[in-house]
Length: 173
Image 1 (cartoon, rainbow, N blue to C red):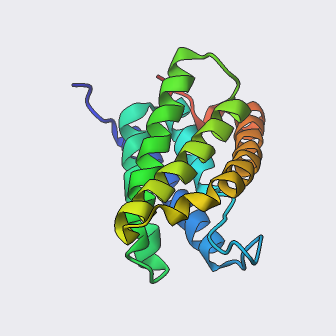
Image 2 (cartoon, rainbow, N blue to C red):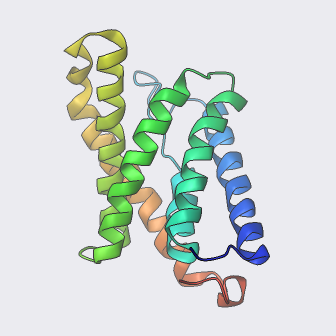
């Protein structure tokens, strides 16, 4: 197993702090669509995919899992950690696989990840409520997930393109 350098650990910690901050701020903002208050853009997911591209899988899965558990606790909704952890880790694994095989661009991969995230949250909701009625949200969550994924994917693309390379020297896989 590859030894985790102090610089890599520090950079992972900074990215976790950024993801936690972004997730907490986004949770405090009013809903984008008042009729669907659980719809969010998910800008903390930009951080997790950036972490994967710069630091690799181990750091990125750690940031994803910790963000998914800690943000719901920070914002006073710890039960959301069940939804968040399942959906975030599942969608991250899909995105990581697609980024690894390089079959699509970052915005498309992010769109797929956002839709997968929403579908996994619906599966958790169906298990928690014991009702399949939650799947009535599928059309809305596909459309909003694709839009949110496009927004985060374009943001990530621009971040990678314009962020100075000196910030990530020696960290790339």
